[in-house]
Image 1 (cartoon, rainbow, N blue to C red):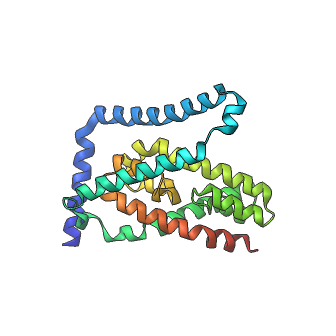
Image 2: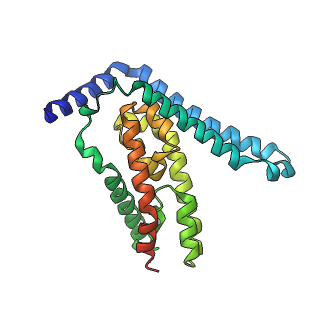
Length: 227
């Protein structure tokens, strides 16, 4: 039964991809452009505002409230569709998603560190934050790794941005790819994008993966820092 369900799930995905054709690819590119355009517009508005306004603008509270509103509507939509979703079609191997995510992230970090000459351990520390820039950079700074802390912050910020921008195209390659790109942010910021581009059934997978990755950030960074 499990094998039949997996084959049916894969067949439905394949049929959906073929049915969309050029129109689907245009929508993907348009979504990427729209996501990127919003980021660029926000950046441009910031540059145009006078410095006193920028300093006094309550950006973080607004972002927090908007994120909570997004997560509320994601949960509302998932709850509405919960009875009609067939989670039996999802392979049980999806339980390994966060651990695969961590393994891939650390492997890329080791590889980058080795190639760049900065050292494999330092490279792994760059990616050990799993997209959670505020925590990993603080943990590294507390251990006196100031330069690495700045680099980790930049890496994790861009990881989140690229995950948002590439979600429409990545979802067509694999519905798990946006979740892997998001890392720890798959449990919050990436949820609306996963829901929209991957399907309702992957929202819970994304939330589960993001939570596990978030819990793992502190022990991973501490273990790799060795301090």
